[in-house]
Image 1: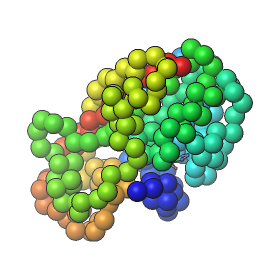
Image 2 (image 1 turned 90 degrees about the vertical axis):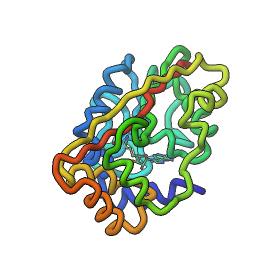
Image 3 (image 1 turned 180 degrees about the vertical axis):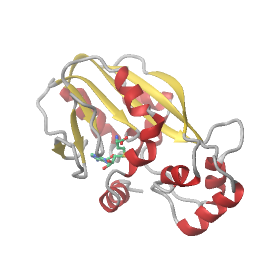
Image 4 (image 1 turned 45 degrees about the horizontal axis):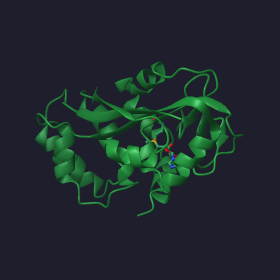
Length: 220
Ligand SMILES: C[S@@+](CC[C@H](N)C(=O)[O-])C[C@H]1O[C@@H](n2cnc3c(N)ncnc32)[C@H](O)[C@@H]1O
C-alpha cells in the first residue's frame, strides 16, 4: 500500500497533528540533543523543524523551510553533516530511494539519527493496547525494513553498523490529551466507536499511555 496519499491527506486536513500529539513527550528535543553538526537536515519535519536545521516536508506547514519529497531531495551532494528524522522514516514509500538520497546529500562521516515508532509497550495494559484492540485491522504502512535493525543493515549496507536503542515515551494524561495522540493514527477508521471503546476501558483520568520507539543511528 502506498503511504504518501494517506499521510498527505491527514496532515493537510490537520496541520501540526504530530506536534500536537507528541510535543509533551519531549522526544523531538531528545533526538535533537543527540545530533552533532552545523549543517543539519530535518527530514519530514512537519510543522516544527529543529531550530538551526533545514527542514523539509511533503506538506507545507508553519515553520518549514523547504516543501518537497524525501525521495528527491532538492539539495547538493554532501550538503549536510548530519540528518535527523522524528517519527517519519517508517512511513516512507520507496525507502531505498530515500536512503540513496540521504547518502548523496550527507558528507562522508555524517550520521543519520531517526526515531522510529511506535507501538504499545510489551508489559502492562494502557490506552494504546485498548486502541489497538478496538481498531479495525489495517494494512501496514511503509517498508517493514525501515522499522527493524536487520532491515536497516540491509538498507544501509556500506554505511556503519546501525545502532538501535529502545526509548519509551510516556503520554499518560487526560483522556483528551491521550486521544490527541491515538486519534492522529494514519490507520484510524471508525473513529467515534474506537474513541468510545478506549474511554470505556479507561474511564478515569489520568489515562495511562506509553509508546515504545527505537532511536536508530547510522553513519555514512
Ligand atoms: C508523523 S509526521 C512527523 C512530523 C515531524 N517529524 C514531527 O515529529 O512532528 C510524518 C511527516 O512525514 C511527512 N512525510 C511523509 N512522507 C513524506 C515524503 N515522501 N517526503 C517528505 N515528507 C513526508 C508528512 O508530511 C508528515 O509531516
